[in-house]
Length: 154
Length: 154
Length: 154
Image (cartoon, rainbow over the protein chains, first blue to last red):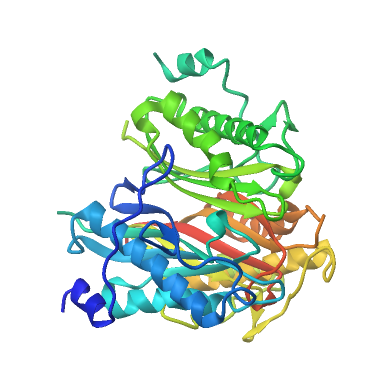
């Protein structure tokens, strides 16, 4: 199965990748590394999941926020490379989770992204990871993901 | 116009790049990537812009803080490379903004850095970006920028 | 002296590197760069240093937390490379410090990691650095370190 078939099997599809809203680019390439701007849980131009996980959102909703932000990461990679063939692997995933005070299950939230990568990317999914807690984030997004990926030579 | 002429046209000049205050380096090179230590809105050894944007500082002051920190980023690159000729492009900009509770215009603050890069670096400016909110940061700096840049072979 | 002899001279030994608790890897390699998942002040599977530095922990304890997390970074590199011979240098160290409100000595805490690297890695220690303040972090860890390292060709 292709990556997009695996997404469809989960009832998911690649969104249109969000465009940057300032003097920067969605994806910046340096050699065979892609640096992807922070991706939000955005669908149809709207931040679907907002607020603090553990207060405004449940853990399960937080995971869905991470999954949706991860879909946008995949959409950016797909647009930059014109497909997934040249993706070697996800190198690093930073998961920034808007969290209630005293709520410390950020890694479980970020699993929503890591598990999506594992399911649909297979051996291209392997990434190092860090999970962070914030009390607030831009656009009131519940999760922001910052990703580095490696590509293969043409 | 050279990059320094473009800075001068904006009434700006490269500061002396701040020296690290511990067992680390201002710039660490790995292949053709430069990793630059967090840069503060520092001039003449003093953190000019302190406190939370949205409480102690206005958005406009926050942007100037980001611009000043970006000048220090450029100063570090200039010192490391002995000029800007070998700079290929700014790869990634992390903008960490000290923010008031409930204040979420961090991306607009980081625009102060992105816009400076766009204005003076031209096609070398293109970078991926992420904006973060913190309630406090070291030295009470209003903005800290963490940058990766790519250089060209000699 | 070897790196492990230098550790022993400080009364330290490499711990068993912690295994990831999800769909990610402890170390992700891209070319000659190693991206290491966030490392905690963990010993024998337990987060030894918890809470906010400046409230629950002193600066000195915070430094020890950073040193212990740095030991885990070294353990991950050692396991990935089967030794330290192929380590070129530590490229970047992000030091995330759980901090009391109003407490801003995060760089002094992260010195606990930078100083360990300088002492035991010698010329392989040189890294760019950024220090961050958080009010809380996963597992209530006092310090989390996120490291990129460069390796040499075989």
